[in-house]
Image (cartoon, rainbow, N blue to C red; front, side, top):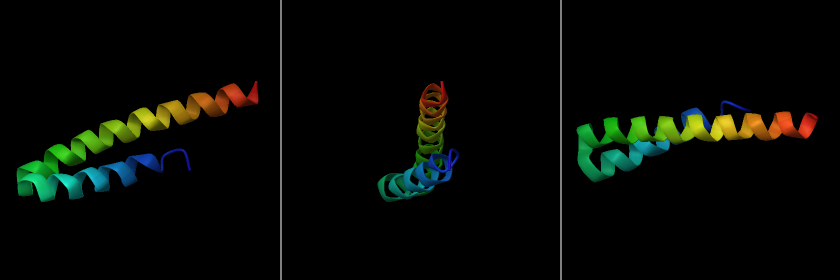
Length: 53
């Protein structure tokens, strides 16, 4: 569950990027989506660790 934002946002970013700029846009969109997913995963882990204390 903790890593779920990574593939979701990567695929979502890839799809939005494809609509905006085809192949190059999909690569940039997937990269941005992966970054957003990684940040959200870190925030989720921090919240879960804080809840266990």
